[in-house]
Amino acid sequence: MSTTLLNLEELGELETRLSHVLPEGTLMDRAGFVAANWIDDQCDAASTIVILCGQGNNGGDGYTAAVHLKSRGHHVICVAVGGKKPKTQDALRAYNHWLEKGGEVIDDPYMAPKADVVVDAMLGVGITKAISGDYIDAALWFNERQALHMAIDVPTGIDAEKGNWVGGIKGCVADMTLNLISAKAGCFMNDGKDASGMVTLSELDVSVPLSSLSLIDTDDFKHILELRKYHSHKGTYGHCVVIGGDKGKVGAALLAARSALKLGAGSVTVELMAPNAPLYDPMQPELMITDEPVDFSNADAIVIGCGMGFSQKAKDRLIAAVRSNVPLIIDADALTMISEDQSLEDEVLARKAHTVITPHPGEAARMLHRDVKSVQADRVTSARELSLQTGAITVLKGTGTVVTLRSSRSWINPTGNACLATAGSGDVLAGMIGSFFAQKFDLVSATLGSVWLHGEAVRARNTGIVAMDICDRAARALEILRWGGNPDDLVDPYDESEFILDEDGPGEAIARTMGSEEA
Image (tube, rainbow, N blue to C red):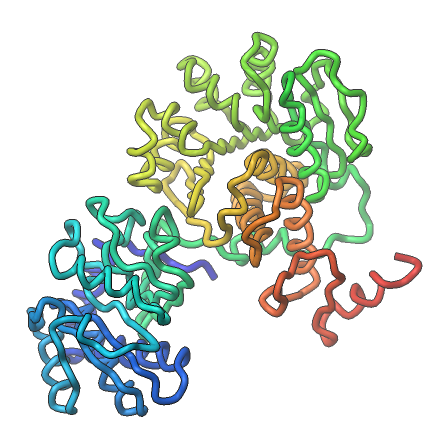
């Protein structure tokens, strides 16, 4: 089930409602207990733990967690940052309870003993301006420690909704973050992704309402994860057309086409813009290649723009694709041409067939006629504006890829890392989306599945990945999931070694067959 991402207004309304039905301090008691369990799970017996506590409820969560951790034999020191007591009623109650239990409170973190674990419970979602003074000093201390760094709710300094350092001032960088009640969008985008580390969620036994924003999960594209029927043929899985590849950029179109083929399209035709185009792809001879215009009436999906260039020939083919009644994925150079031609953008908006646009922040900025910084400052809103402007599903690529519908229903992708920052990565994604559209999966499943698998493909890797590896590893991820495997059980689930799945599940047959001569 998708993980709901509440914005701060929705979260505030929920907490207000809960305050009328739950006894006073209940949420803080739950938060502190859950945080203590989470911290304790990462500790050896009798660890030294230093908790940085602010003046608000985030600090109260820290004091409450300290009580539980102390009772379990850990040496716990709380730092009242700047020597300031809590301001909120619940947090002050937690602070006094900590003192009553014999807890130690100091004013300066630099006076704390060497710690095994340091915990950020300073500001959480309550930050409205850049950190300063004692909070900057505390954040510097936190980041300098040779210890496990853990943050309760949101790392101090990160905008919980947008993932940027508030005011541009760097705060706490954690190895692990515990989101409370709702996952926080800012922990999955921009600087927030690096600042949060591994994110865990506890809803504190609260019924969290649905929202228009959530994290992509495999449940969002479960039809793609179903095994194929034996009684089928290549026509069952559709014909994808890839248009692009001007002189010097033929590889971009070929990457998209190979990805479409490897992710399951029955057949793929590549229409290249370059003169003297290659007659075939020696690395993927199954591809059909031409430099003549393809008849769109035989296509089930079109991917256009990858290395396409800006010639008149390219623009004519873009116009023809936009005017076709075929699902269309618009990428790269095609997006730039649309951003420079209002009439063409109007035609995209008027399309009846499904349309997906896949801009990176620079392309999004050109389409929105603003700078990249403003796009990145609020990625979700920027993506929603693009969907309203074009009528298309928008896939705004970047750290925390955002997918939005014209209705403003949106998702953030939790998978992926810096290995995706390589030439051709976006071409592979466009081809994957085209493949699933050609196979006639519904538009939401096709798009969300492609984005999630594209990011999942680089899990457990930090370097040594090129675009073609992403395609191959994404296909392998899909294979493992279709046979009921759990990639979490493997160190690098998408390496070249054969995988063995649950012997009691459907994976048993495939594990045997892959090693047999018949295979």
